[in-house]
Image 1 (spheres, one colour):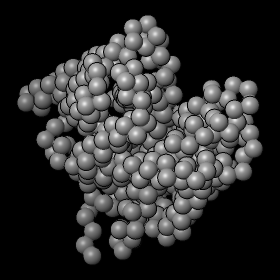
Image 2 (tube, one colour):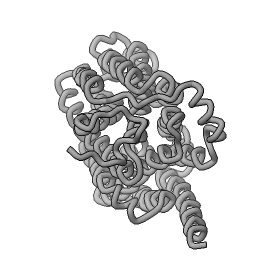
Image 3 (cartoon, rainbow, N blue to C red):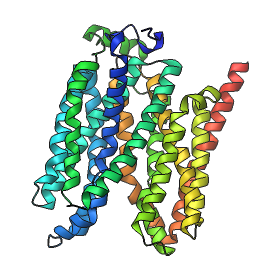
Length: 406
C-alpha cells in the first residue's frame, strides 16, 4: 500500500501496514473523551434521588459532571510533559487503564463522595488520553493531511457523543448504575494501542536542549492566543448545555426529550461540518476559520437568547453546532502547526487544559448574567464576546494577506 509522505514524518517509527489501525485507534481514543460526561448525564436525576438523604445532594450530583473538567484542566499540562518525556504509548496505556477503573467506580460507589473521587480520577485519565490523541495527530500528519484528520477526529467525537448519550439514556432506564458499565469498553483499546500505535522517535536530552535553544520560548504569542481562544470558545459554547435547558423551561418546554433533540441536532451539525473541515481550510486561513466559526456561533447564540419556542431553538442549535464544528479542529490544527517535535505533548496538554478550564468556568461566568438580566442577556453577552473575537481574527487574516501580497 502506498503511504502519503505527509502521513509519516521521518521521526516516526510507523509501519505502513498499520496506517488504518493506527488512525482508527486514535479516533477511538478521542471518542473516549466525550464519554466522560455524555454517558452518565441521563442518570443524574436518578443518582440525586438515590442519594437524596446525603447533605448537599443536589449540588454534589451536579458536580459529578463538572469535576472531571477541573481535573482535566489541571492535569492535562502534566500529561503533556509525561508524553514528551516518557513517550505517547506509556501515557496512553496508563490513562486507558485508569479510565476504565475510575469510570466503572459508579458500579459500586456507596456515597456521593466516592462517586466524586472516581469522577475526578476519570478526569485525570481523560487528560492523558486527549493530550496523547492530539499529540499523535501532530506526530503522524502534516499539512493538509493534518487538517483533514483533525476534522475527522472532531466529527468522530461528535458522533460518539450522540451514541453514548443515547446509550446512557437507555441503560439508565434499567438502573442508574448501569451507564457506568459502558466505561469498560475502553479496555478494548489496550491491545489496539499496543498493536497499532508506534512510538514516535523521542529526541535525546541534548537534542531537546538544542531544540529549545533554537526555538526560543516554549509558548509563543501565537500559541498563547490559541489557548486563549480555546478558553473563550468553551466558556461561551457551554452556555448551550448549562443554560439552554432552563431557558427552554422558561418558555414552556418542559420535556427533557426535546432538550435532548436540540442538543443532538447541535452535535450532529458540528460533526458534519468537522468532517468536511479539510475543505473549509482549503478556502480560508487559520484566522479566517476562527472568524467564520465564531461568526456562525454568535448568530446561533443570539437566536437562542431570543427564542420563544422550541421551534425557534432548533436553527439556533444548528448554527452553534456548525460554528463549533469549525472552531474545534482549527484549535487542534493551529496548535500542532505551532508546536515542535520536542514540545508537541506539552502544547497538546496546554490546549486540552485550556478547553476544559473554559468548560469549568462557563457556569460561573454565565450564572450572574442570567440572574441579573435573564437568559437573553447571557446568550447576548456570549455572542458579543465571540463576535469581537471574530473581528480580531478577520483583522489578523487581512493583515496576513497584505503581508503576503507585499
